[in-house]
Length: 66
Image (cartoon, rainbow, N blue to C red; front, top):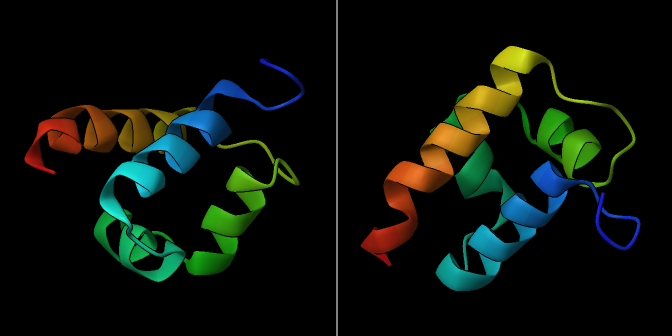
């Protein structure tokens, strides 16, 4: 964790800063609910290994498109 923020939360926040995507758009593209994205992003709940891999792969594959 970095400064109290989990790595996955930081990756999500940084991606959204670069793309100006709201939570709804990102959740739609990840095929997860907005509520689940909020939980992961706010660190209320930990992502499953599958969710973490999905998010990391999506961000990695789309980071240069914006």
